[in-house]
Amino acid sequence: MLLTAPAPIDERPLVLGEVADPTPGPSEILVRVKMCGVCRTDLHEVEGELPMRRSPVIPGHQVVGTVAGVGQGVKRFEVGSRVGIAWLHDTCGACEFCARDAENLCNGANFTGWTVNGGYAEYTTVPESFAYDIPDGFTDEQAAPLLCAGIIGYRALRISGIQPGQRLGLYGFGASAHIAIQVARHWGCEVYVFTRSDANRRLAGKLGAAWVGSSGNEPPGKVHGSIIFAPAGPLVRDALEVLEKGGTVALAGIYMSSIPPLDYLKHLYDEKVVRSVANATRRDGQELLDLAAKIPIRTATRTFPLEEANQALVALKTSGVTGAAVLRVNGE
Image (cartoon, one colour):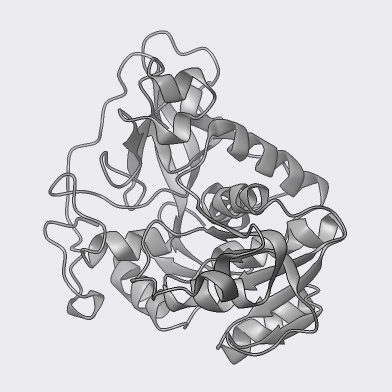
């Protein structure tokens, strides 16, 4: 599914097309895509809120598939191995950010489905050092959302500073939040969920939310940390109003609408912190996958065939998906 120019998703800008199979370069693997998760970042890219970095481009960065070929020097994987591909495609490995374990901020990084072709296709490539082993116990469909929704939700939990036993607020309850709540509950956190969708409220309750309401509602108590998954700037103000002293509001999206003016005493005083979450490191990815197998995390999914990628993104935009949307590419 190719994107040549951004447009509202209602105009179905993704077009099914034929392209040559990619060839793995040195230290790269060729992956036959089985499943590819559908992320809100894909929607931001397709609609132009995230500027295009190449055209045409094949979106998609939550890839589960099998190794179909290997480039020169590949040692980690063999043909037939099951692997996952996430948002971070490669980094320079030499800049100040890479040197201090902050490769997610690398100025020379490439990103799957944005600066390089991604998983809305039958085949894609990735450096072997940026591919993941998929834990046993997950089907391809169940594993796909872990590779971005899961990883970024885990990093957001870390950035929020939430500690076991504390109260956590989640704003928006889509693919990422429905995984993050399972990690937070595993840590013994009390979780308050803010969402408008009745279906997502029911899912939040099933996954252990102690309270579910809408943004602007008063939760049972102030929260020690919050994560905003919805790309709505006004939620920052709402989250700060119910944040405990010294707490952090983590902004987990790659795009957000304008944040309204804040009142210093009401919203920011008492050492409250607002912090963005930018991409994720391979360490985040590995830790999340290990934790997912241990808990174990169970993802709620709705599948679409590859050729219905536009419809999947429409459903994502209109809250027509409970949990995560996943494209079936070569999967059964």
